Length: 135
Image (cartoon, rainbow, N blue to C red; front, side):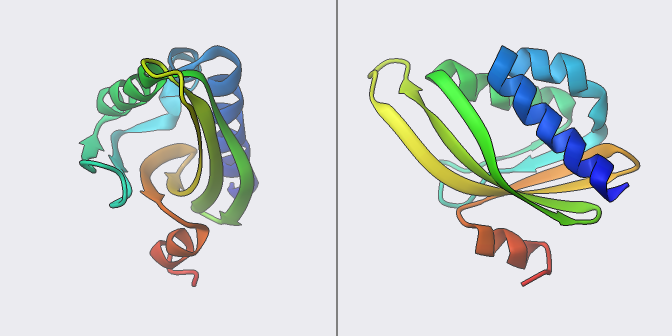
């Protein structure tokens, strides 16, 4: 199941970049467990937590609305079985300002039975590894 989990994550990123957040959630929405939870990194302004598929979709749509030319590229995927760490390069242009934005952060996904149960954002790969208990 571990390799399948990695492929699910890669497919999600590909669809987001090719067709947008809505297409990805429409195509892969069934991969989110009903109790899915998202916890933003402490370093973002006003970090928040979200519970449920609809809350995740709304949060991703908000991100997409804030940026033009939004790209979320997985630059590294660390397979830890049920836990997957993805180092993400995010780029885009601020919708209001037109300013270029480029940042790298890490995500810790937890998948069970082919469904994403949770996602936690971290500022760095090392923090995500520590969060996964692998550091």
